[in-house]
Length: 344
Ligand code: ADP
Ligand code: MG
Image (cartoon, rainbow, N blue to C red; front, side, top):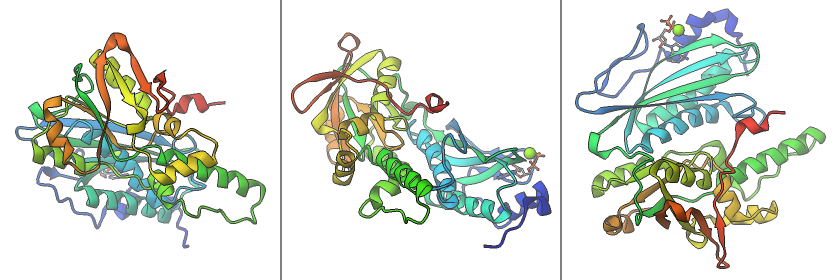
């Protein structure tokens, strides 16, 4: 591939190159890229904002992350936070710190993923910032969305007796990462060997190109359902349940047999000598939604696509407990992904 040093274009030239063919499409975007600040029309809506910072070597590994996927994922994980408020993302900003290891073409590839996510989810890229870094790549995405005052779903609204639900299946992304890490280590010692991923497309897709649950929020709107609480699953189901319990001042029980785990995930967990339910509880990066509903809304979720009732909200004194298939009770712990604990 052709390699153009970023230095030959400079910061302004690079921004021009990655944004020149782009046109915003959202009604609420009054002014996008090209002024000192973007302008958003928000009429009667509440503005919902979320930011993430992704650092090379901590949150992503360039040895197995294609740049286009990285751009796509960086946007999607932010949109997921807006959906988790039962709101609709409309705009994003993207800020980059880039080391000289990255060429203009590499950044263009990153933006192909960013623009694809914008198109898929109906959001506009309205600005950002670009600077150099001494080492590695850093990407910060801010998502801005619209929420209706009485429809926003916070972490603190779960009530005793509510049903706990998740969208989609869990644990696959974590096992996808284990596969990639395994092949990376084999490659380090045996560069002549080709990676073996056969039969694990789903796990890799969940890790490298996750999706945010726009469709679930749309189903809620259609059914006029407002979850009593909601959070997206980025650190693992266990950790997110504890967040809702703490914020809402409640406890929870989860039925192991009701936690959705795909067959491919199940098989991979066994191969890695891990317990599938542990992968679902502690894996993370699923970007599914965990939410509670009032039991009177049970009929509404029963007919929704891809929603699983996994347990119930109980009193705080009863704690957060997993009822295993074997009839045992285990306290749920937050062994989510702790990026800080990986520091050596
Ligand atoms: P300023 O000097 O006011 O910070 P910049 O020269 O950094 O302006 O940016 C010019 C325009 O390009 C602004 O609208 C800014 O939001 C946008 N922009 C800068 N970097 C990026 C980026 N990485 N992605 C998208 N838009 C960007
Ligand atoms: Mg700037």
